[in-house]
Each structure stands twice: as C-alpha cells, then as structure tokens.
Amino acid sequence: MHPYFIRNHFILGNYNTSITRKEFEESFTKTKESVRFTFNGWDGKSYNGESRNAKVYRTSIPGYEEVRFIKVGKALCYIDEESMIIEKATGEAHPEAGWIMDVERA
Image (cartoon, rainbow, N blue to C red; front, top):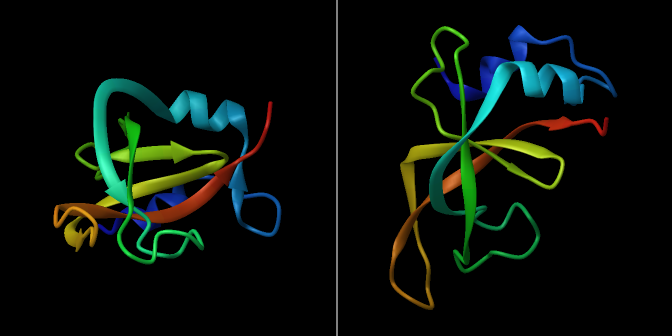
C-alpha cells in the first residue's frame, strides 16, 4: 500500500489536510533512527537535491509498519525508498520525501 493512503485511517481536518496533535502522538512513535533525505524541490528550495536530516517516526497501523515517516515543521512526510535523488553538490543519492498531511498544534 502506498504510504500516502495512511491518510484514510484518520479523520482529516482543515480542508482534509491535517490531523490533530493527539492523533499524531497516538499513532506515531519517534525512533532513534535518522534519515538523510531531499524534498527534491517541492519545498521551494531543494531544486538541486539538497538534503536534510530528520528523525524517523514509525507506526503500528497495519500495512505501514515498515514505512519511514518524518516530521518537518508541521508536515508529516514519508520516505520514498524507491526514489533516490542525486545531490548535485556532493554526488550522493538520497531518498525523496513525500508529503502526507499536516499535524495541527496542540
């Protein structure tokens, strides 16, 4: 199942774009694992594959246990393990992050 469809497990608010902080904390657990990733331009900055680091979140929702999730600002994203983007400055390949939904403030 594509990670984007985890949205179907939640009642989305704010024009179907966000979940509550409570839902997020009940459904996702922060791990000690980190991932280096790129937004590949959809953040309006990383058009040359510039990468960032983030802590990985996991979930126990059936079908999504192996997906690596990250939270950047209010955005909850998934790591697309099959989409490796070359960072032009370093020549290194990093997985691309894809937006799923926002997490509302508490």
